[in-house]
Image 1 (cartoon, one colour):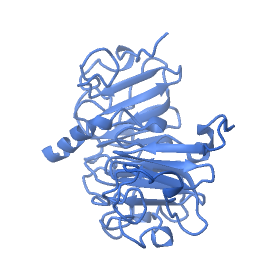
Image 2 (spheres, rainbow, N blue to C red):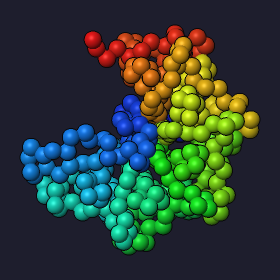
Image 3 (cartoon, rainbow, N blue to C red):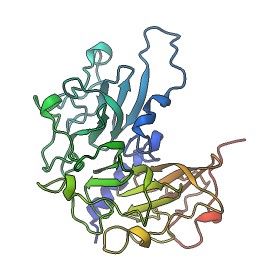
Image 4 (cartoon, rainbow, N blue to C red):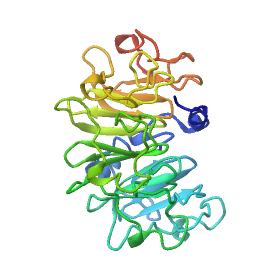
Length: 350
């Protein structure tokens, strides 16, 4: 049974929850952004103002933000109590004069290392480096840094750079895309499989509620891949508050984890992935409507949004403040007959 404390954390996080992908929410992550496509985030890099530094990609977390600059370095600013800015202290940045610009240090990623993709969670940050390895820093209460312990990184001196270990993804494995959720992290590997670690009430998709990455011998080859179904692989992944969604190779969508308000889009409030026999072929695909498939996906705190193949948007899950954009406060996806053709598209204007 999931705790009320966990639900409370998610509800508090709703103030920043609208979705992920390249417009991430609570998690802030570039969740559905393939590392190889990071440079495509800016179509025109011509500079009308020579003082402007081009940004290749960005990710807004919970009260902080990070960018990859045009030299593939990383800068972060905002709230920093847990070391999520990766600057070796817990001093916030950007809240006082003379803390930004040239006064804001770059994150030390290690000797000769640069960043290809970045994803911010509530209190932790992850990057895919130029060698397709992964490093994470900030809060690690549930093992969301994937380093086999619960020690924070980046909040004290000498924890970043070459002293910050890479995440063990498994023998010979590298990362193509990454998404930092509230307290968990997911990657798409070079073989298009998915691995997740950190807090686990089903959002890791491993058929149990055991956290991963907070103890020794839980990562690398010991960390199972998420079972997406027979022959299925992932094209995009988005880690939300307590759930995770993926776009599969056939452009369908599957979601797993907590499902308090129908954020999994399966017409009920039953969580998936926290018990045996709920993943793989037993996990239904989200009904997006007749003939519709997904181009991008974004898992928020308690809701999910997708860009469909006709470039329209559909959202489901929690809707207390109208976050689904449907002109009411009725949750969607938590009861039968609310998904598919019965789920309206978000009206974005003429």
